[in-house]
Length: 105
Image (spheres, rainbow, N blue to C red):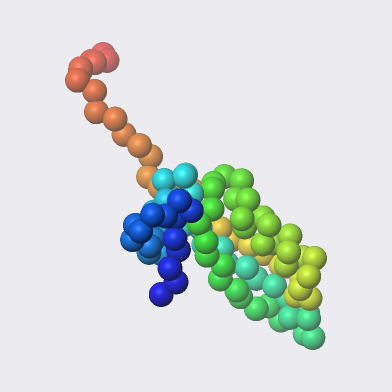
């Protein structure tokens, strides 16, 4: 298990990975999953699937965008399609109960 110490640590317990995940969520990031379809460099007619998952901020997805920019610049497999799943993209509509009743004829 990786131990992450606080910067001003004075003997406090080390942070567990779950603690740092929780802090990321408090900062407004949520788990994002992307299915990346790309063409095989040696066989461009064939597609391969890659699943990427990290905490990212919707709707701009800066971490995913940085990863895709890296992919396009450094890797040989040409991107074909990226499908993104994020809780803010698929969550149900919010409903709020009110303490009044309105009648419409």
